[in-house]
Image (cartoon, rainbow, N blue to C red; front, side, top):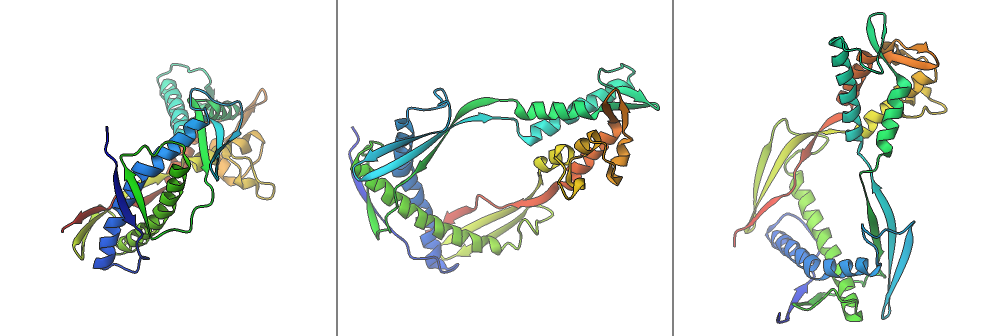
Length: 320
């Protein structure tokens, strides 16, 4: 048996700047936010989701809304069946691997299926590659449900609240519902303080996504009785969705050139960037240079990759 221990947590003043008092309150906000989440918010939200009767193994046929009335409180859960599909990165890598393999086979004189020789160069069907991409995008990897909870209006916020540590806060009772809403309101205030403190602290590094460092840089800052360590680590971020769109996006009504290369080729549209494909028609299909397509995919990868900076988690040492 767990003995109940009532603990009072208090609200914090608004964030006002990087000084010792705010560093103390940042530490308190992080600790209290974690406590509210683990002991009040997460257990109650889990119970609300279980109340719907749906999960990844028991999915509804379509979107449904399940209400839950607890005393004067009404919660609404929107349950949506989901299908996890391959990401654009998976599609890009699978297509690139397929094309590279066909090129290697062609160079080895293996006469790969789906590759034609035109003027001593390997060609592939633009229609075939588009169909491959679309099939990959439709492929389902797993099925599940997404449950979104709409809470009643949160209270304006009290100066403090009592956490009954050790009590079962997952029971769908009116007392737990009120306490959950109090905790949500308090957590939002803590989160606002944390965000303000961290945003200003990160600003002192001098780095951001618009100005990433060339290599990992470290900043230590002593504020009041606390030490903060921020590592600014550059990393490459590739927008694979834009890469795929560069090949299979439908052309705009006013700007045809915004369409994906392969779509434009299959429509017989001629613009300067498509010359690299040296497109040919054969039996209703549009054939393009295999090497040209791989080169274009390499260029799209280069153009759609940016250097960004990762600065979290912030290491925090309360030296008290």
